[in-house]
Amino acid sequence: MNITIQNEFASVTCRTLGAELLSYKTAAGKEYMWQKDPAYWAKTSPVLFPYIGAVPETVTIHGVDYKIPRHGFVKDTEFEVAEKGDDYVILSTGTNDYTTSVYPYDFRFTVTFRLDQAKLVVTYGVENKSDKEMPFLIGGHPAFFCPMEEGELFTDYMLRFEDENIPDLHLQYPMFDNDAILYENLKSRTVKLISSRTEKGIQFDFPGYESVAFWTPIKKDAPFLCIEPWCGGTMDQVSCTDMLQKKYVQYLSAGQARDYVFAFRPC
Image (cartoon, rainbow, N blue to C red; front, top):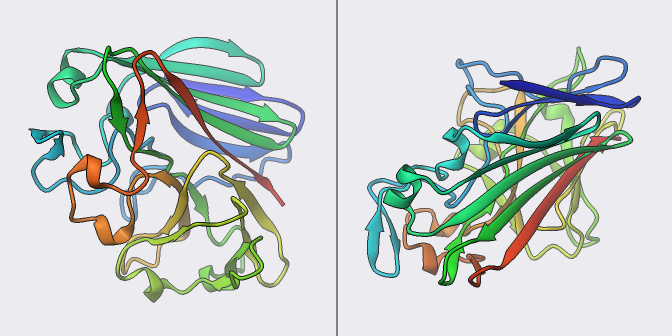
């Protein structure tokens, strides 16, 4: 089921399957989110939990192997609508027979989409309902049109960071030939994806995350870029499937809950 929220500045559409963000449009009707095309990538914004990365066979947790799928199972889960208003919606899911077979913890997971003027705030809420400590990885994977205007090229765009020691990254497709590009240890958790011609684009904030990755499909010249806030490993750990060895692995004590927030707006 698709759900739309809106205010005078923008409208946002998500779906209950995977709590996936599908669309962000300004009041003038300009779309910023990649619209699924299997020729390039048949998703728009999958939710990554409780694992991030490829899984050749299994994921190991405390010495036991579990068949957690690539990027976790939440992206394929049907959520319920817990609460909805004109400019926000809260989607919720939790433990079931399947999840306990691949992830031995009792949990509640929510995704909140909330419009604050033109800014969309996305909050992933994790609650450990187990009687033991719960490890997990978590992240977002939203894809944005790049280029964003007719007559522009992917290579017209750049990533601009607020940290003074991080130079602008001018986009070229070959730089993604070895998979995603990951930044960590940033003082400012803000990045802009903007045109070098106009300096217009989007501002993306990820205060709740330890790192941010950028990805577009390898050797496809795809017209989009994913901005992926992560708490879940680094690129040199891709082949490691022991969850507890992953850098930035998260833990919640029994009964504990925590929110992970990212947000974006046109700029």
